[in-house]
Amino acid sequence: MKRIAIFVTAALLLTPATGFAADKKASNASQCHSLKAKPAIAACLAAIKADPGSKALRRRLGFAYLEADLFTESISALRVVTQRWPNEWQGHFDLASVYGFLQAYPSAVAPIEAAIQIEPDNLQSLMLATIIFRNVRRDERVFRIALKAARLGERDAMFMTSYHYESGVGTKNDLVQARYWVEKAAAAGHVAAMDQMTKAYLHGEMGFKPDARKAEVWAARARKARNLR
Image 1 (tube, one colour):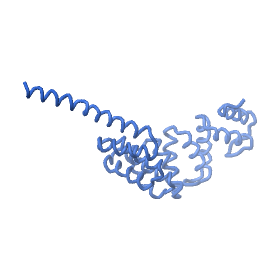
Image 2 (cartoon, rainbow, N blue to C red):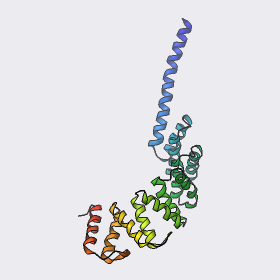
Image 3 (cartoon, rainbow, N blue to C red):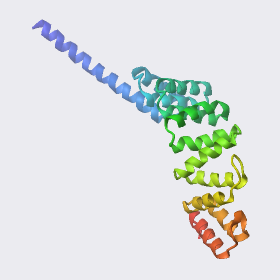
Image 4 (spheres, rainbow, N blue to C red):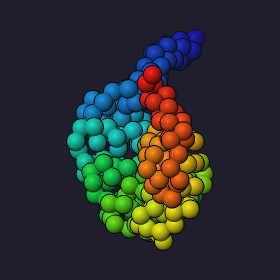
């Protein structure tokens, strides 16, 4: 009976401690995601110690470092994510995003290329790539990526593609394609494209024939899109 009493007492003592540890683990994970900057860093590090295989916690740690202006630490933490999960696009995208935020565009090239290679049709990666490649002066790459995103239905990419065709930057000048993509962007709700359609019909730009009625139609659509009356 004495041995049974000892085990029962031990069980009663251990149960609250185990529950406390679980609660503490959950609390650290929750605070990792809810807090910002240095308080989040401490919570994330504690949560990762308890759950080292959590990709979400490691990603959050990288951005917590960024919020605290600890840029080297942010990049190091996000690199760990790309190394542990090399076949998942999000980690590479995150790393490219931080390099882009820091305007370290040459360093952003490799991770954004990796993200695109893993998920070629991911619009987030494609649009970030247009920013990165524009800043490293690779106009042809910007055009090809923008065109792909435009074909996938991204209206900012449609407008960008129109610009490339109209200006001949990164591709051959082609006003037919420029008109096609600006009109498609405008029809998709891109306000700047609507403004360009208005100007094009007012002044006969981009090879459009002047047409005051059509100019007013596009102007009205642009006003409506801006919630103006």
